[in-house]
Length: 353
Image (tube, rainbow, N blue to C red; front, top):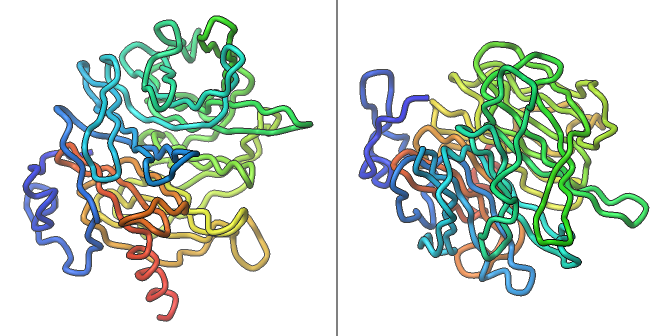
């Protein structure tokens, strides 16, 4: 990943990296409704917390990836409203709702802390740690540096369980990802235990971006430079790969994954085509009656520079985001918020062609 673009370039939409040269950004690139305040070091991955009481007061939680980094919380105007305790190179982050902790339903943000081989868990919207200093992952393995993460919420027989699916900098094919069940304790802390190991890996680069579709019960992850792999998300999902798509059309790295849910079963999967500064869009429900067949619907050029991580919601957040938003990391230590209507317009135009 090349990260040599200035903040002015990231916000001004005038330059992108192209090897050792600079080239103009496409004139048709979708412009953001909001660009966040910059963090001190290196943004990497965002996640959207939808306020259940008032969606217009929702927050974005994003990582600032450095030895002296942390999680940053932004309001919908892009203003930093809070920073977590200092974390040692937090990589990716995801959010889940309603984990029972000390008898109370608690929304949580979970991030990977790469330099300590841990995951860290924070309550929301307080952004306070509830993990007693962190939970070690990939224990007993040689390759342990945690990177990607996504949370799966499963309700079975009226019982809700939350799982963290965690990736690492490198690892063996077949068990690259480890899945942990999060357990809330009476003392207000959260622990975790391994329930599954799975996931093919090409060995080409690394696996960082992971995204779970709770309603469809599946998980996607980017095998950088190769494609997007799909598995069942449940702890009893086994190790059968359901799909391996997006193997063509990417300039170099497959990165951040965002899922836009139009209904409980339809919508879009957006994958960052990192070095092209675009998002590749696929149908969430598949095509031709096959939920595991994915056809490229559109390639959406955006203002982001070499986007690593992204998230999306279809919830009406009010103001600039009546149909929800896409939020994506950009070089320049920022995140860009897009009104979903501007993304949908490009998708619709591509469908007509």
